[in-house]
Amino acid sequence: MMPAVPAQKVEMIPINRITVVNPRTRSKKHFKEIIENIGQIGLKRPITVTRRMEAGGPFYDLVCGQGRLEAFAALGQQEVPALVVNANQEDCLVASLVENCARRQHRAIDLLQDIGGMKERGYSVPDIARMIGLSAEYVYAVVRLLEKGEERLLRSAESGQIPFSVALEIAEAEDHEVQAALQAAYEKNLLRGKRLLIAKRIVETRRQQGKTLKSNWRSRPRPVSSEALMRAFQEDTDRKRILIRRAEAVRGRLIFVTEAMRKLVTDRQFKALLEEEGLISLPEALAYRLQNPGG
Image (cartoon, rainbow, N blue to C red; front, side, top):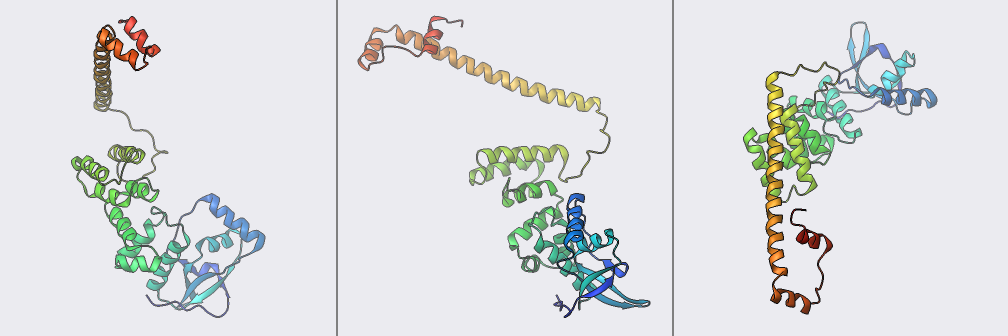
């Protein structure tokens, strides 16, 4: 990428002549904070643009500072302080992507447009990693998960819920192989305890709601079909049957242990052995169970 050399002085650039080549979206709360800060203390750092000559005078492409530019416009300003650099439009766009990556706290979902845009323009994983200051392994994982549309896994991996390597294993696996991928991660000691439970929940959510993170909370709920109701009812019934079988198995073991213990405490030799060891009483719950077989 051609290095961008800044001008030696700040110029006042007409806002209506600046084009944002890599537009970003931001929360209203954050944008409001930018406006308030600039309104109170002014612009601490000028925006950066590159000049392009066209009919009707010079025009400018924004390299970095979209929030500051839009805040100036929201405050009713006609011009904005800017440093002018020498770069073509492609270099300008890449510089904007790199600047966005560098100033953010590297959340993978936020980097989607930037890393994806650089990859689409032919930059290799090592090149992207070098320019934005992240490891090649991280960039490869983000790129691969994005290519497969795995936004849900990408967010989970970035938040530390599951390792990136496990997220990639799940993404590469067929639906019937996902459980095997989780089992392999468990055997490699990558998922244990709470993290394993979280990973299973993520996989189940991915199966039910899809790979992407589309926001559907404003849309009308879809009507529930009779087939979906029957399927949900069957799944709930199956879960209850499993719980019943487990409860019956535990009850059977408890009855067996109780009967075995009842016979033992009536055996003279066993009682003598207990007395020799100083065990002259039974726990209250066990004594109650032996005295009340049906309790």
